[in-house]
Length: 298
Picture 1 (spheres, rainbow, N blue to C red):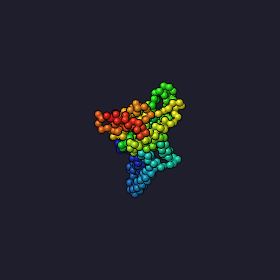
Picture 2 (picture 1 turned 90 degrees about the vertical axis):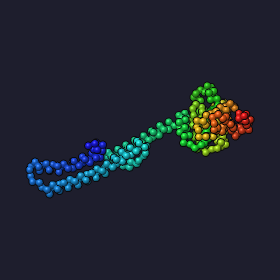
Picture 3 (picture 1 turned 120 degrees about the horizontal axis):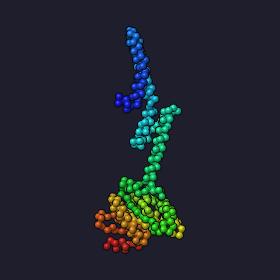
Picture 4 (picture 1 turned 60 degrees about the vertical axis):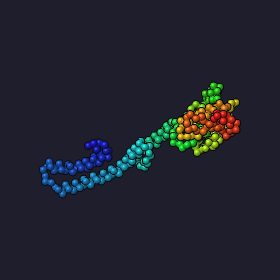
């Protein structure tokens, strides 16, 4: 009985079998009550007709239930694996309406899930990838170049012009950075006025050039009337240890701040935590900052 409780189609087949055999059951009972001699020829014919009717009914039911089973499989595949199985059935009856409702439900839920995933991985203010999305990308990334940048004197912008203007500056800087970098590079808002860039398939020189190009684009854009908006950046060749690379890029960013802001500074990754990173400035500032780099390594 447990089998029939757990199988809808089996219950339908059992119901069909019982209902089709009712005439035969009635004939047997009626003959027994009347105490008549059994007409085996008639009983045999009735039995054969009943079995044939049962087989035909089961085949027709199986055919009619096929789209219902397909809908169930499609819903199950989407719920368990978010897999889209085709629901091809189309009709104006109840099964057709069930198929239409299943198609609509799967499409609607898939769209809602996509929106939730997009919101979970997107910074609401700038539309860039957020920290969570960036970390997920880095975890699956081959060695690349990492840059962390910070808008210069952003607190002063907020204090002078207000947070609404500060938000607009963040959006404009984000848009300028997005347009300046390659489509293969991953740009994300790290938090506050900080952004991070994963420069894929780049050597150090190419990464420095790309970040300086972005720096000049931000500086040249009239983001805030009467006030130059710039950023400083620390760049590091990734070693495979993201936490160490990020800390090194962050220290290098503040070296760029101390050196006068509005510049890109590169640091070679170190193998030991006790070593002092050798600082190399951007290609544009190389000649002017060479002495400073040598002194810090002395």
